[in-house]
Each structure stands twice: as C-alpha cells, then as structure tokens.
Image: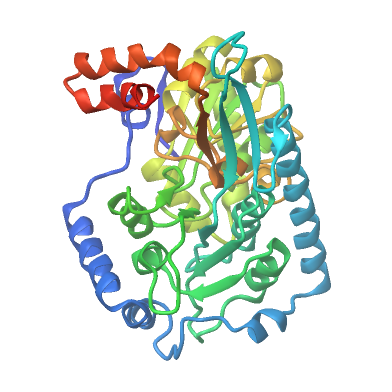
Length: 442
C-alpha cells in the first residue's frame, strides 16, 4: 500500500483537500452544549468534575499554587532551550509591536494618533484612534498525547509584549494530578499570572464565564482538540477568540533542487502529533515525488510515532504532482495550509506569490521544527483552510482599537446639517436632532 494517495494537478479528487473546512458534528455540538451549560451553572465544581473524568481521577483541585509554580524544575539543558526560545519569541514580537506603532503617540495606556476633525479648520477638534492592550487573556495549552511548553511561550509572550496584565493558562493535568514541569517553567518565563489544571471544553468555558473567585478573561487563544474548538465556536460573541487552530497541517513543495530527505522530514514533522494531522506533498514531477516518499519510508521505519504518522498520511495526506512553480503556487493557495515549506530553487520568489498560508518557511535550511519551537513567530496558526482569512497569533490578537472623537462648536456648525439629513434619510429623526439641539441652545 502506498504511503499516501497521489494525484496530478487538476484531478477533481483534490477538492477534498482544497475545499476542506471544520466538520460539523451534531453529536459533538450537543456534548459541548451540555459541558458549557454545566460550567456556566456550577463553575469550578463542574470543571473539577470534567478534569477528574478525563485527566486525573484523584485530582483534588484545579488550581496550580504559586508554590507549585515556583518549585518547578527541569534539566538545565531544557531550561536553557526554553529561555532561548522565550527570548527569541519576545524579541520578534517586540519588533512587531514597535513596527505597528511607529508614528503613533505613546499614551499612559496604549498608543494613539489623531487628525483634524475639519481639514484646514481654524478652530477644529480631532478624530483619532487609541490602540489598547486587552486586560486579561486565557491561553489554552493542550495535553494528552504530548507536552507543549512551546505553546505556552508562543501564546503568552505575545500577550505580555502587547501589555496584557493578566494571563491565565489552562492545561490538562497529568494522570497523577500534576502539570508537566516544563510547562510550568515556560509559564514562569512567559509571565503567566495563573495556571489552571483543566482541559477541553470545560476549560474554555471556565475562561469565558469565570467562576466564584475567578474572573472571566477577555479573550481565549491557543490550539486544541475538537472539543476545544467546538467550545470556542459556541462561545463566539461571549469572549474574544483567535482563529481556528485544529489538527496540524503541512504542505511541502519540492522541485528536486534540494535534498529529498529534508523535504521528507519536514512533511513528517507536522503529522507526528496525531492521526488526524494533514500532510500535503507537492512535487515537480513524479521522479521527485518518488524520491521524497522513499525518504519518508526510511525515516518512518522504527520511528517512535511511526503508527501515528503512517495513519495520518494514509487517511489525511496526499501527494500532488505539478509541472512547474506556477502550478505549485496554485495548489498552495487553494490548500491554504497551516505550515508551508518551500524546497525549491526559486523559493524566495514563490513565497511572494503565496497569499494563503499561516507560516511560510523558505529554503532547505529553515526546518518546520524551528518554526514550532524557537524561530520567533507564534506557532499557533490557522488550520482547515482558515489561512484564507485568518492570521497566526501575534501581538495584534491582544490589542484593540478604540475610536476617539472630539468636535468643537465650529465643527458642529459645519457637520450638523449632514447629521440631520442622515437622520431623515434613515428614518431616525432623533438622531438628526443630535446636532441641532446643541446649536439651538445658543
């Protein structure tokens, strides 16, 4: 049996990958409705109940104490890696923020800009905007089949750089009721203010609703399983949310100019998490495809998660054979992958033609794993085709724009007739009187 199905560009069967979107599961929806309703009604008790059911049967509390956090220790090599990654992630997002607010005025809280309310007006007010950090954010960090201290760093550090004061991490407890020390050390490095031992829909509900002694957050970010994403979908409008971050995805384009083994390892990197991960291999010609697939086979034999990766590629992967870079670009933009590796001679040029992907890694010396752990940009990326309209987690996720308007009397004299006209036009005469009442009081 082939490692993954293969088709030439233009085959109608590729629509399965091109037109994918989050699946609607009525049974899952009903389950999450019940979980969220229970958390809304019973708060902490409901979350503890869920955590005991799915994570740790003997769990006595969902709260990680300050002592637990402070006493977390990892091997020196692990701590050094976490610190380097944290520094790079912070540096990247500080540069992003400084670029975004270049030309804005720094205010006691946030940044602002303004323009004259009336152009060339002698006694005019102003119109403008303020850019403000959110007050509180919840970060969901997955557990279960892996340990993800990188997800703490990649989501909490951009929030801290943006100026968020309260950052809460929710992550499932291990079977013994503890949280992996690497996750807790990452929380310390990222400036997390509170850690909760809770996972799945119940954790998202706690962040969105709050509980006795635990204030709700303004926004929830972070990747998760189908229960996490369904909870986010149902809570839309009740709490701020990031993009759809579901099962991992990767697209690798190889034209034969780079090592087939390098292309193979990047394809396998992003299908190592779980059986529902999606891998798309795009190759310039069948000969290149055969070479990369052969290298995949060699890397898989005896690998620690061989069964997981084979299942993901067999059931959710595909190889697409194209004739040139132009066709490759069309495949990439249709697929809109979470991660994209360009292993081709004209990688820099082709990257400029890619509109739809969460993260593009250019050239053979830019591994997928570097983007996952240490490069700097957040690894929380849009999946299931959401890269067509969504972005990776970044400082903008933790900032909001507030409009500001201040008119003078002379501004009002000029604008009031227009206000009144719109009130009449739209059938709201009281709106129209908003200006005239003020002027008629003189």
